[in-house]
Length: 334
Image 1 (cartoon, helix red, strand yellow):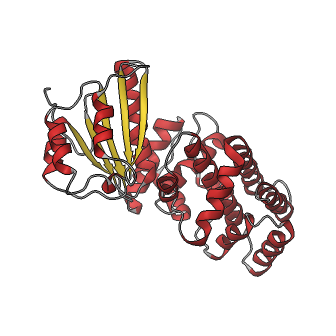
Image 2 (cartoon, rainbow, N blue to C red):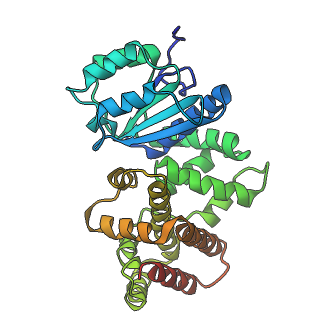
């Protein structure tokens, strides 16, 4: 297969037979996967997607899936998450041999936060691409915010406003994208996102103490959750309701993401790593997501978003709004 000119910054396309997406920026890995899927569908029509967990899969079964004919579509998208646990010293020779003659009816994607470099990279880049999806610095986040606003939301944001957004949210592109979506809706189609709008709708979210509310939201005891909420609100600075609301939305987002992943058959450990769950909070979140399922998780997430918008637009009483959210979390976690 003839290989086009390579570029480390280009997006993966339907011409790539093997794609490596490596780095800690989950949003970028997801975006590149979506772009690849769109390119494949444009070229091949309907495609089949197969997912493997690196820690529990065998390289032989992954490569066999790539080589076998699909029953439902003409092309396969074969995704391996936590790929560094599958691509080891003993399995690399098999992947190198596959890269020398990859299946034309499948695109193999290795995804994960880590990737061990080696001569395999050279073999892959002859038939595909290795893309880094690392966390970005503030300057890169600002430029990305401007480009994303224009391309994804048909709005604009100047460097000063983009800088304000990054200052409030940090350089997490997924979090920035969520706020951009809300800001674009509030601004109205075609209207720019102004500093005034950001000040009104996006609170500072770097206060660490308010995040303790997440450890109580899923305890199943409404009175205990409300008690902790009152302590946080009474002992923190004015305006604390905004980051507390964000902490609630963040937890609901994790529940929804895990519930959707479980419904799609994604390995539980892979989901936990992608959602950055560790320590004592991991099991309650995983258990709740499994119990409530996608429909109830989405309803909870939508409730959080509506509450967040109401708080940032000064409609409604902050403490009352947060109390209602706390009760909703307690109900789903009983």
